[in-house]
Image (cartoon, rainbow, N blue to C red):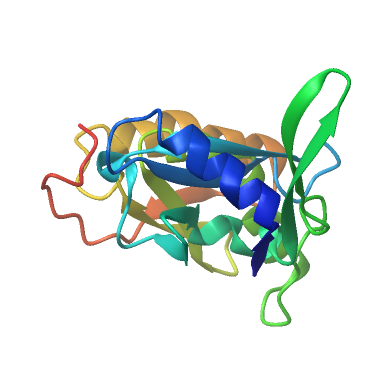
Length: 193
């Protein structure tokens, strides 16, 4: 999935040694599947990890976490270390970051909505440890979504759905008549609010 050069591993270990014990790395893509896609790396501690949705990749002395929605965009990624006159920097090359994955099981509208959720909605929900996925679309244009992570059980989910996601989806996809939540919400420590 992700390859990290020996030089980059040593450098990451050096950076992590200056952080609190238990700090690891998160890799992400902003605006995945679009021409504006940008990859990034950040520190993450154990409180930032969503055990249900984050995939863990273990390396010597540290772990890398990637949200499951980002995995297709980070396929065959390479992390390397580049030294030049200006200093040392880590590079992350992700050949699929700007490529939209199309599933054979989804119609064009479903693919478009799925891409919209991945690129426009989920990056914002990920800030709260949450995500949303397309569950189904009826012939009459009703979209059913399923929330997970910090969105599951969140007391603000109705506002997020009706005032945010539904408005954006209807604005971008006139075929949609309404958006409904099919999540079985359970409040708990995982819930953002």
